[in-house]
Amino acid sequence: MAAAATETEDPGGGVSERDPLGASTGPEPDEQRGPAPLDERERRQLALTRRFGTTGSLLLAVGAIGAGAAPVDNPVSGMRLIGLPARMPTVAMACAWLGMLMIVTAWLWLGRFAAPGRPRRLSRPQLGRTVVMWALPLAVAPPLFSRDMYAYLAQSAVAASGADPYQVGPDAALGVDHPLTANVPNIWRDTPAPYGPLFLMLGRVVALVVGNDVVFGVLAWRTIMIASLVLAIWAIPRLAARCGVHPSGALWLTAANPLVLFHVVSGMHNEALLLGMMLAGLELGLRLRGTLGLTVGGVIIVIAGAIKPPAFIALGFFGIQLVRRRGGGMLELVRTAALLTVIFLVTMAVITQTSTWGLGWMETFDVPNRIKTWLAPMTALGMFGGGGVSMLLGLGNHTDAMLSITKVVGYAGCAVVCLWLLWLSFRDRIRPLTGLGITLGAVALLGPVLHPWYLLWALAPLAVSTTDSRIRGSIIGISAVVALLVPPTGMAYVLRAYMIPFAVIAALVAFGLILLLLRGRSPGLPQTRGERVPAGS
Image (tube, rainbow, N blue to C red; front, side, top):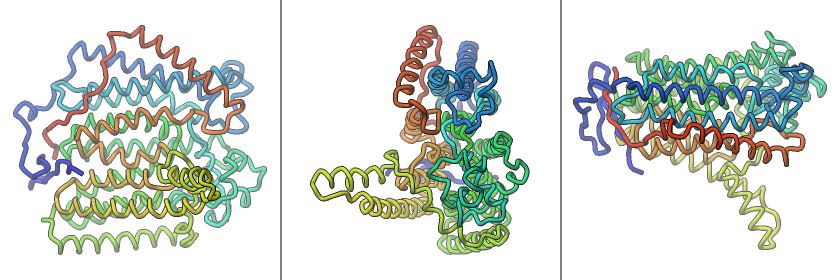
């Protein structure tokens, strides 16, 4: 694998770009002044892009009423006007798909103004206003794409009831007829919590506030997730500036990304908490100097891991970054590793003791693997080899045995990738944040379960740390495609077999007509070539 450009920190805290071989490639004279603002024609195109994306977001919000992941007792079902989409689910689904297509397209158009190497580029305030315009309709609409937020509510209620959420599921702790249990997908009703202890401690507080009110609970969790997203948005441009990446480009790849809009703002996955705490820990740990920075950054990153374990990986790359700042010697590596290990053990001991649930959380990380999805490459390989090929050869169905093998191989592959990238980062061959992003991507892709929102683990570290055209192009292509893979319903749908195809066809026809009307006025697709920009301090 070709190494990405690395960074060095000057005594004042800035960074300078170097090529993969280590030679300095300081910014060109024009780049030292930074890109100019958009001209009049580009501002008109930006306004069109904003309106296009906002219209798509409004359509998606309307479609959410009838095609979203609504609770069992949908509160808008009996309303005359607002409840109309719920009485026309196929039309609502068509609106939702059309909105998804428009948002993805608007994001690609917006990328034209944030592309590397442009002489003129949109500013952070312009990008921020655009993100708010696109996110606001989804923030007030019913949930889409997943029913996980109902599992959050139920598991939180289990924790608040005094039961051990790592021993019993909502079915046993709350009862089958409980309003929170009724909204949890059947496969998760009798399973222990698969979440970190700190996430359930936060959920316990939420449950004590909202009680059994599903709608209030959804709004409370959405507020928490959006606040966490804001924290990530605070850290992203600052980390990008440290790596010589233009903040607007990094924010476009992250905050404005359809995966974030769909699965954080609307779907409310706890990846928001993971990313917010992990990125804030990295930024504060690098901003503060000496032992204080190591301690603060380490504690916050461990807190992120106590919410969702993949964040623990950031601890190693954070340590490598500090080692490189202090000279990069083996003695400094051992010292930093020892200090971070102590911070990890002490922080997790305090969290575990405070939670009152002991070490039960260590035994539940395999709970999500109950789902077998073809989207996960290793699981797809196991199902194809153990079920398809084995049955074809007359050897019987060995799917479970094959899945056990592919799971171990996948985990081993993750460990190899992580150790190798840690070593490359230590040897100054790759930026630690780039190594972190690639490692988290490997964990998502090589794990036994893969959901689209798992890709967010890798998205932010890569977006802030590299302008490599291959990585950037991969992020753009994967985000655009994967954002359209998950239906908006987030659940098994009545008559879904024929409703989804008809809705998708209607959405495609309407989308094609809209593009014809806008022919010649759209900005076009983003560039992916690399850039060199002056680094911030």
